[in-house]
Image: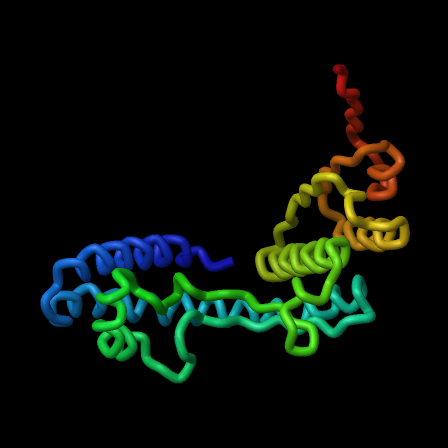
Length: 212
């Protein structure tokens, strides 16, 4: 989605690794300040890119989660990896002693997370395996739709063991949503009828049996 993200993220990982190594021998924060002066602006830029993306994705993801799991209100939020009110350069300086004692940089963009909750409870503590699978599919579909809208490019969807953990109603629901994307979809399934539900037309269908 953001062409400059990968080189910036690679640089952040390299700087964090160098910082962690230097902490083992540093006698004062001054020895790390040069690295942090470059690390902090990159961290804030990555955080902004992530936040902008999640802000755009959240509404689309919520609608798909509601379509798949109407019995639950799933909330998606982004945690950037450090306190949202704190400048990252200040945090690196203020936490130098703690980081040095632990031997690594505790907070930062490398600790960012995507949080999914139902009524304040993590989804993995509420949803069944099948429901979790549907939720993940909803998130992937939302990402694909967002990519198509922003870049006018289609995704290719790869789904292994399509029917696993899903009853017939939920399989049909997922199949309809996949067909609605108009994208190319590769599906593996135990039986042919499970995969056929996914397609408006079959271009190639491969079948095999395990021989013992």
